[in-house]
Amino acid sequence: LKKLYIDFEYAPLFNTDGTVSGILTTINDVTERIEAIKKIEESEKTLNIVVDASELGMWRFGFDGNESFLSDRHLEIFGHPRGSKVGPQELLKQIVPTDLPIRNAAHELARKTGTLLYEARISWKDGSIHWIQAKGKVFYDSEGKPHYIIGTSRDITKEKKHQQELEDREKMFRLLADSMPQL
Image (cartoon, rainbow, N blue to C red; front, side, top):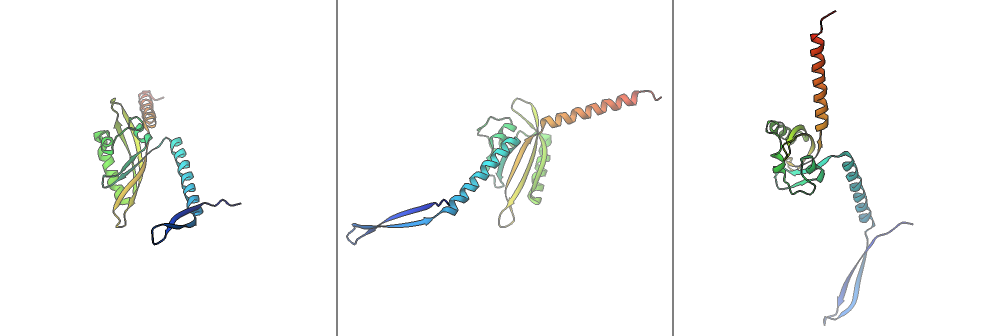
């Protein structure tokens, strides 16, 4: 038994004197449209669950500067509470100045190649330094010009600290090994 979705439209039929003589009823089968909407909603729900589980921040920026979307997780990665009214320019100011050229070069390359990837340090309001990784895809308009970019951000601070600890241990081991008398 298949479920059908039907849309009814009613319009009055008027006599020449303006009185209603009847009602015109139109019935449209909108099952395909409703099922398509339900599939999109279900896919969106699944995607949101996956994104939440992955702890990725999501963002979208228009290259014209007029359009932006920042997920709550993206804001948290930059040290802001969920629902904050923070714009892309404010987040850009949080990138550590010596890492800003890395970010800018990655965005320029992305305009040409369609793919964004970079790692940079950001500074939170409390002065603490955190590492982020940004990945994105550029979408072009009908003339082939970059129109907007959609991407994810990820806090990689713990990974970077662990990597630094390993490098520090390796240096200590090498110093120890170099300072030991040869047998």
